[in-house]
Image 1: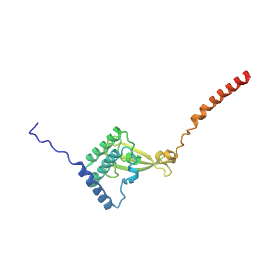
Image 2: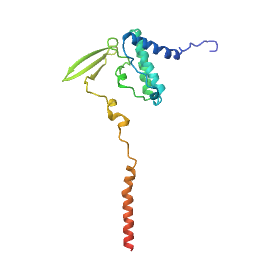
Image 3: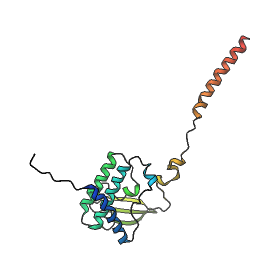
Image 4: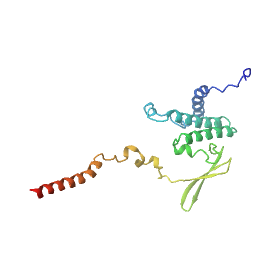
Length: 194
């Protein structure tokens, strides 16, 4: 309609500018380290989908900030986490396991102990388990509580630097027996003719 004024969208740039200050203030009050350290500048240039990861990082921190400011804003934090999960799936981005463990798989709410989930330690069949139960939907996650356990992404075999490099000459060695065989046949042919 020509005469109708559409409601404007909130300026996202202002949110991006205000969130780091709010997070820093919140963590300084609690005496904690920051949840997600900022990557080094030289590493940021090497990331393929840098803007997408920055957006996921912003949504995750916004969900934390919303719950820290007012623990009753569970729905808004759930919306941020659901949006983060949707963007990650759409762009096929792998998130760190520590991030994925703090988001409920069923209802996409941010799992913070005492606010949106309960955390219990159990011992079953000689194994120590950490049980995380979402208070919104009731789904339970079980994590093995083994101090010696390492995720695949943390093992040295998972790093590309430690992978064996394919030998470029291996293709030439496969062809060399055929070439030798063909040269032997030509030598035999020469010996027979002489």
